[in-house]
Image 1 (tube, rainbow, N blue to C red):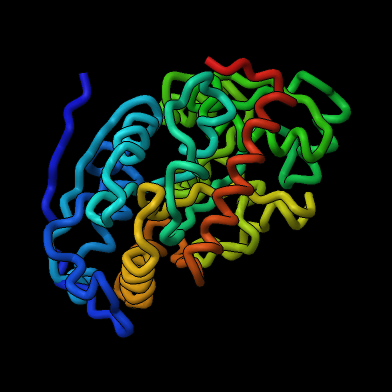
Image 2 (cartoon, rainbow, N blue to C red; image 1 turned 180 degrees about the vertical axis):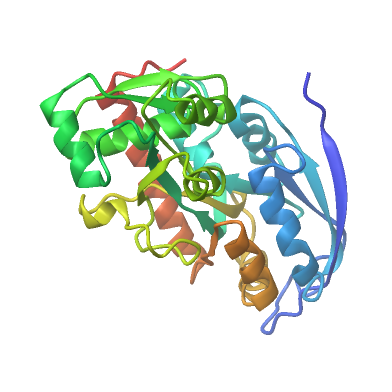
Length: 321
């Protein structure tokens, strides 16, 4: 059974020019619902931002960990909260990929939420066991076309984001490989390092150390541009134009949250992510700070993600569970 964890991070008051009816916002603590356990990816994003945000906000931020159903429990909880700016959701890529693999996710990212801002992106890394006779993405595609349905790749589980990200690559390149699902990404990468499966695509934070140790060969990163922590690794898009499939994290609020409150929260995110210390911390973890210029820009990203993953799942024959 999962436990809910409530953590307090002190954030002093956001001072924003042009305030109107909500000039005193926030008057009480703000709850951020997080769908990962303490120490998990999205949880770490919120905690990393906390110290700098404490310089621009004047109320406590309560981190409320609601773990389970790949973040769906957290999203359902946040969707039903009052739209007053005192409950927001730390959303992440899995909230979008869920829509392609869950029959009843229990939330609607577009209709039930108001975007605040994208915060950080974390590229994925495509890597292969040294026994696979390829050294780059072009070589992998050529092999897959020569031996359709023979190359195996590992995923964290059936329908996991790592499954969908790989199927998106196969769909884009019109190739066929076989998914070998494991019980979590940790066992999946262990299986590839051991040579049980030839290939995997997953978080650069976890995969890159195996590459640097010589246990895996890096083929490409999923981001639009090369990452600063590993500039020698090409992007998959250099071989497959248009391919991009990063993990991402951001903040959203229940639909109907007043626009001036959303604007203040967005301004706080911008100010926080300008901090060199915050950016350096994320870069160390393989991430890139990526604040949205406007809440609407983040909304456009969400719409793209919501439409993309159900289509990928259908094309891959993934049955919603």
